[in-house]
Image (tube, rainbow, N blue to C red; front, side, top):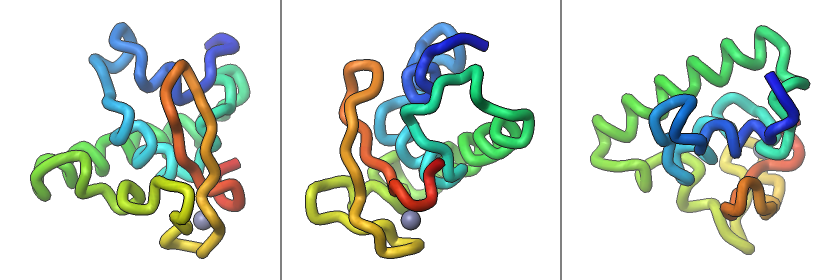
Length: 107
Ligand SMILES: [Zn+2]
């Protein structure tokens, strides 16, 4: 609920015990959700996808040795391209943190 951007909510300690900045970007990219969306615009299936993606990204990070091993992490940057569709990654600031996302797929 509310007008908070979805990424800010993911980073909020009180909601899901502190998802880190990189893990939040990875989760939102996996779920194909725009980090700037406010939580009140998320439908049930968006929430299901976010929940599933968060769990998958967390497990992968533990298995592979850290959140820096996420699929999108090396592509976060001014010359990065989305590894799924090739679109140049876009930068934004959400909740005071830098976020990188695919403007084509993350809607
Ligand atoms: Zn993409």
